[in-house]
Amino acid sequence: MLESLKQAGKNIGREINRAWENLSEGWRELLSRSGGALTHFARSASEEHTENRALAEFPRWSLLAGEVEETAKEIMVRVELPGMEKEDCRITIEGNTLYLSGEKRFQRESFDSTYHVMERAYGAFQRGIPLPHNVDMDQAEASYKNGVLTVRLPKLAGEKARSIAVS
Image (cartoon, rainbow, N blue to C red; front, side, top):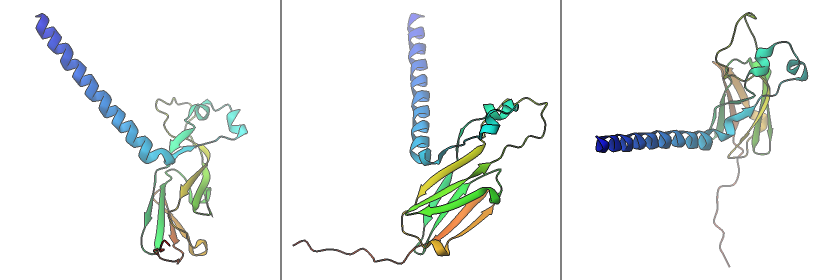
């Protein structure tokens, strides 16, 4: 009986270790792949002092998941912005960084309800996305469809890589 309890304890310990390793691996991947997507949402002073307690309790950080894709001629940046209108987005480029800023507005259908899950962040935000190549800002185009902002940035024609002899 004592041996079977010891064996059960070892099995439980192995399962706990396996679960912890999976959880740790998931967090490491989330941080390494999505660290840049973690975005702070700031609320205005009037929203901080409002009687609407639900907004005050919503998260101030959220992920704005995105991707940067490069072809021979252009760089495409896509960022998920669910629940936003295209008029609430601003795009600027400084150097080799695309800055996306805007405001995700809180809308509530009923004020006599109780929230049980609060995972969406609201407020003003800014996110910087590094670009892998110089781009032609004058030819850039942006579109917004199904909650995804797509920015197409033609690459600037530049010198190809070349070798330099060491003397």
